[in-house]
Image (cartoon, rainbow, N blue to C red):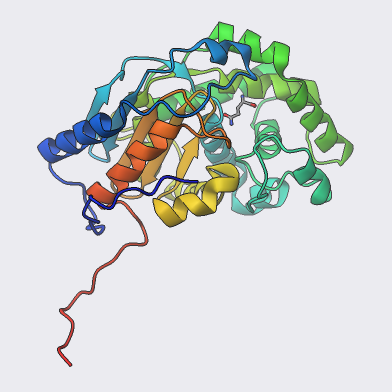
Length: 336
Ligand code: GLN
C-alpha cells in the first residue's frame, strides 16, 4: 500500500508557487524527523552490492525552479541512480525523435506488472509498453543517437549530466555487480529482439542500460534533475536548456502513469504528483512549474520503491501544496 497517514497535515492547495525558503526548511526538517526512525522494507538484494548498503541512510532535497536547493539528512551521500535514469534518457530520446515516433516504439501505458516483468511483454504482443519498466527502458536506450554503443552511452552520460548540472560518474562496483547478475534484463532484451521491438544488439543495449543505472547521484542531484523537468527543460541552477518544454510535459505524463510501476495509480491517488523511483532507494517527485523533491533511503517496499522516501514525499506534497488534483473553490460557497 502507498502510505497515506497524513491526517494531521493540513492539505494545502496548489497556488502556483512554493512557500518561502524558511518555511520549506521547516517542512523538510519535519518530514525528516517524522520518518527517520521508520525501518520497514528490504534492501535490493538481487543486485548483490545494493544488499550491502547502510539501510539507515536518509536524505531529502528540494530544488525550486529558481535554482534554490535545500536539504536535510545525508544529502552528500551518493548512490546509483538506477531506474530514475529511465525518465531522463526518455526525455533525451523524445527530444531527438519526437512525440509520435517514441510513443509508437516504446508506448505510454502501464503494464500493471513489476518493473522487470517478462509476462508484460508476452501479454502485449512483444511491445515494451512504457519507458519506465525495464523492457521499455531498453527500447528507449536503443533509440539514443550514436553510431556505436560507446557513442550512445556517452550521449546518455552527457545528457544526464546536463540535467544534473555537473559531470556524473559511474559507480564501477555497482556496474560490475549488476553486470554479473542481470540475466533477467538480458532475457528481456533478447525477447524484445525476438519480437522485432529492439533496435541493435540486445546485449550491447543491456550494457548501456546497466551503465546508465550505475551513474552516481545525490538527493541534491535528483532534485535539480527533477526541477529541470519542472522548469520547462531549463536547468534552474546552470541556466542551460536541456530539453524543450513539450518534452517535459510528455515525460511527466508518462511518469505520472508509470513512475512507480504497478503502484503508480495508488501513488497518484494518495500523493498526486509524478514521481520516479529506483531500487537503490531514490525517488524524485516533480511539481510542474514549481520544483522537485529528491529523496533517498535504501529500504524498499515489495514493488521496489523506497519506503521512507515515499512517506516523506507524501508529507511534503500535502504540506507544500503540490498535489496536482487538489483545489478549493474560487469564491465562497453560497448560503442556501
Ligand atoms: N538496474 C535495475 C534493474 O534493471 C533498475 C531497476 C529499478 O531501479 N527498478 O533491475
